[in-house]
Image (tube, rainbow, N blue to C red):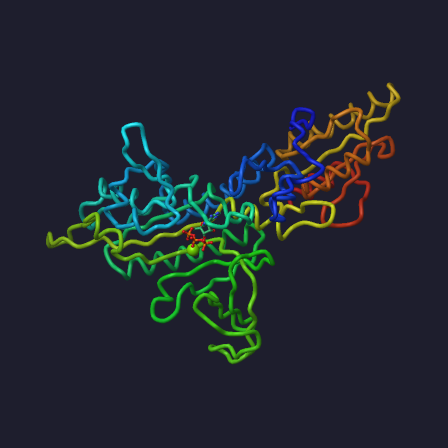
Length: 416
Ligand code: ATP
Ligand code: MG
């Protein structure tokens, strides 16, 4: 993409009422724009990052054998009354239509996916089945002060699985844990698998938590045996003995990137979602649900991967693979030469299938281009200038040193 065609959303300062670092830097670097607390626009660069996160999640969901659907955001009140959550869910956004009927804006989709599944589940032959979506959720959050970490409108992946029995659910649940682990690794994140609640229930619900200073959760964690529990249910202090291996525990700040539950018949019962077995006897369908905070992940990545100059995107989610800068001199003849060379590099990169943002803008100083490139944080910077001759300057955003390379080096680098 030509940077001259990319609107300049970069700002000197983030809005004064924005407290969260992730939102501050993403606004300054032109990835998002704030509409109000907990509600953001994803600008062209930000949307590319969001899409890359989505693609990784979608890949692993498809590998799990789940089918992608897209359910409505607008829900009839009746579905939420069926489970009792119309009154009990404090974050439920409710809207009133012109005929005075009430609706909910979906904060999660058990109340919708169960009736959908009912259309295709009749006998044991229709199971197991798994449906997922990547969709905007609405929650009337009390404290929407953490930028993308806690939106009132945010993007989630939610997966729902349907089984004949608990053993089959347990098998799928274990496969989902493996898929989630792969997803977070591909995103460049170290996610802890955390027991979400204590006692015997703990093995039926887990959170995936990423250590981040601004995270709202506190995790009791053992670096030796990986024991991890949410502080909400475990009152351990720093230095207490790990219940599993006896080594000292630490309490760390973290943010929940995923949450998985064995719902069993919690939602199939109220909707009478049943199947018939070999003998024709009816049973309740056994369910699991599995969420991932797609937009929260983008915020966490921004919190973790930056330096004083700007963002440092992991290659798997970066808006582009390479940022090519033409340092355009004022002299007309020289200008033509540099722009032609840079255009040649741009064309060859694209022919190699490398996603590149080409800063072809004239009348912008080298210093300004470098500063903006560091702020945006694309993993590789390539420079064509009066100094680079037939070669290209190559620099990784995360490393201090630049070097002069041939084009073949660049293609090799991206193939590796
Ligand atoms: P939290 O404990 O952080 O409030 P939750 O347990 O209510 O989250 P789930 O209903 O399990 O969240 O949603 C699945 C995932 O969606 C969470 O693991 C989290 O990554 C993400 N998520 C939940 N609420 C928000 C929000 N307000 N803004 C952004 N992401 C969210
Ligand atoms: Mg949760």
